[in-house]
Length: 118
Length: 115
Image (cartoon, rainbow over all chains, first blue to last red; front, side, top):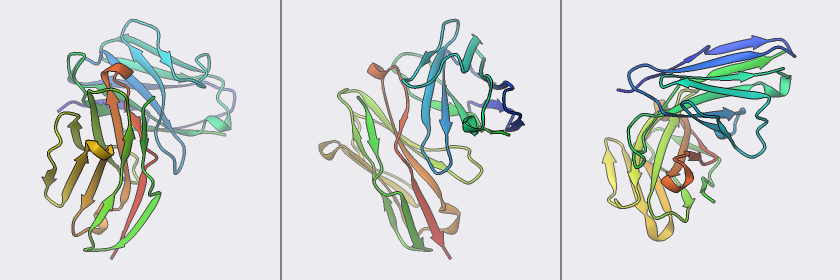
């Protein structure tokens, strides 16, 4: 079945530094990827939608200059948390639509990245 | 706007009890998909089921069953004879073409099954 590989699975960084999270679709082409953030005991909140070769669409309230998303190829999307602060500490998960066609709705999730900013 | 509501924040049952997790959704789209996911402590999301808006047939898979009722905009999930391994957070989610295929999650229900 479809697999999305997400790295790193966890990362600790110092306040003020930047962190990059990668999501790769291993056996399919992901034209659309979604990035979610999940705080402890809360739901998954959609941050942005990225389409290969175009700019990401951010949800209301998400700072696009802080959370840089790049989807340069059909198999790779990256999320960079710039100038990270402790309040950015969270669980970040990517998801890719794993089928073709506008009417197809199947999603494969990465295993998540637990970010801790100290 | 689309919305998914899981009113039960936490449920605790004893092993072998049946338990139903409620999910109510809102959408103006006529074509949409509903999902259930399980999230164990490791954090990974485990896909359980997908149902499209034109298929109201209930589904059973082993100890799991789902009741989809468009009339009440509900998509409830029942675990029969619960087991300790069922302990996890369960999310109901909704997506539709007119919303760009975004998958919107409910708040989640934390299920604790005690031995």
